[in-house]
Length: 286
Image (tube, rainbow, N blue to C red; front, side, top):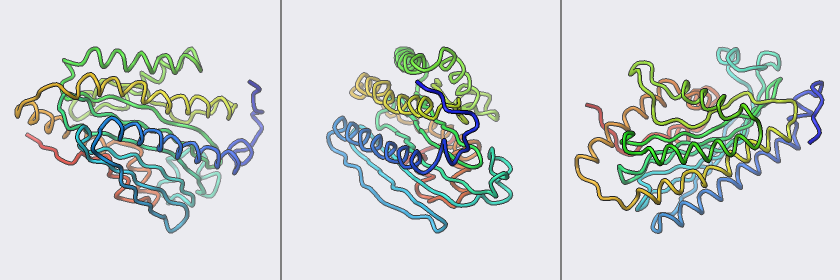
């Protein structure tokens, strides 16, 4: 595949045509995931709610509550404007571009009705300031980590196959990044059993980086649907449910204290309902 010149500016390598292409694909991925989840659930249907952002752009919330999925949200957004001055310093290239940015992506979090089905998170995104890059990944959060070795191993095997198609070092590098990112320092424990996480990916080839990001999105259903099917009909007790609600507390703590996507959305005037879609419908703390 031909490499783009490093001299190309973001408005060339990450310009309007590529922005439109990426945003359209995120929407297509959203539709594919929602259709697969509805088919698996058998009862629930996604309800969609569009929203707009005053400075520019907007998105759409897709939310379902069903037999298998207690709450699953699959959100898309395409927004543009200016970062707040206090936040711009944290974003590569923002201060070089007067705080201007463009961002598009799809973000998913599923909290399952059965305590035996792990929760999951996935997102892919493209961001442009004076620089341009892709980011994303996915991770698995069992409520009972000690009983999910097969789920963990097969989930990671699917991610490794995806990464290996694009770079020999991608899987070990992005797995390590995920393990470090989805860690709760105040609890000294991981959020789940990991996955992959990558950010600021710009190898110099927009086509190659977009192809990898698309492959991550396409791999999601192949990695997660077998986990659901393996566990969704297992019997569970009131004690199992209690443990699930307590484990969900860790998920809430991470998303409100450390998650970059939550911070990005709130700092850029995003839709609060969409940003906090990741929170579970019921949760407890001891």
